[in-house]
Length: 261
Image 1 (tube, rainbow, N blue to C red):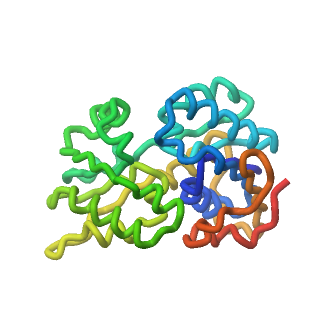
Image 2: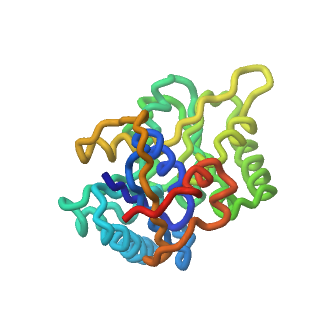
């Protein structure tokens, strides 16, 4: 079994680690766009063009499924990616976990990039899946970029700024950007209220990994002894994980693994 994941940068690490936990034997192909990152400020047309190139580079390795490990790319490019690659290659997008977060019943905050916060896409998700639960949209200025570069000071500053915008009564935080899952513990600590338990955090990585397996008819087998290989593509050429990836446990998990073929 071979699973490909794509993103402009290391935001795909959370979903990659989730796939690895569910199926340690799966070969992984990670396709990144370091020459074109970040994707967030790009026009939808430009982003879609770059996403297609990154996806086609991964598809050349004949994976069984392709995970779009980026919320922004899912918003703007998922239709084009599916049109180009399916049905031969199932394409799985990443959507903020608003529905399971709202199931807890308490006020919810969605931490997302400034471009996504307040967007029609996110407002539609809130309308369709929040089930009447109060939702606060919190723009996280600079957080994705800080995580991408493993800039610890910038991460702390961006997390603190977003926490200051998060209402005090929030019981659940949706991590609406895949980069944020890499610093989930720091976000949890920042939004914890002194007089109560820390808010629950909801990312998308686990659900996306499980959906990828469902799409190809595979079952989770976390106890397999075999360990699959990992191939990293940087603008279509084989390379190594960007150095900042090794600042995170999810990146270090993949550091010593042999390439997949």
